Length: 174
Figure 1 (spheres, one colour):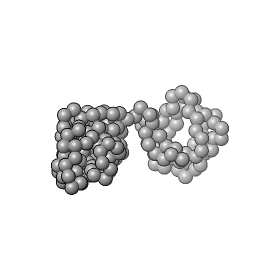
Figure 2 (figure 1 turned 120 degrees about the vertical axis):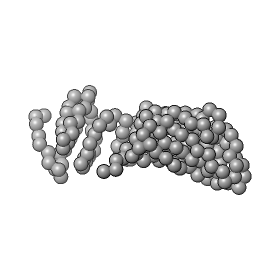
Figure 3 (figure 1 turned 30 degrees about the vertical axis):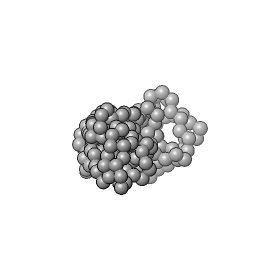
Figure 4 (figure 1 turned 135 degrees about the vertical axis):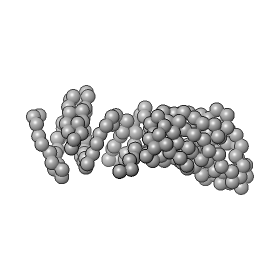
């Protein structure tokens, strides 16, 4: 294809194209593509940096997320305060099947090499347990770990195994 200089604000269209073992530069960042990459639709990069982006998926119809294999699964061993280890950018945590009194909170540490202290961790109660009976939130994020707190919002004690899903968004302070 030869060499082309693209300036901020320019649009480059490569209809019916694929890139094989290509490399290019965005600003001062070199981006390399191994193998053959085929792109359908439009791609817009604004002040972008792509670093080891193999687990990121962006699709016009399905949104932004992570590719298959980026996540993992783990189950707490003994109680809702037992820490877990899941070194993945996203995943599901099945909590222990122990009682949580009405209005009570339980916190546990997730050891995760994928998280940095400036990242944002999103958590949701996605299955298991009574829908709407649990509040789930992150109470601490530091390099290599984050803390999840689960609250029983119901009027009675619950002995269930809520499943919590998390996703890490990479962020910086400056």
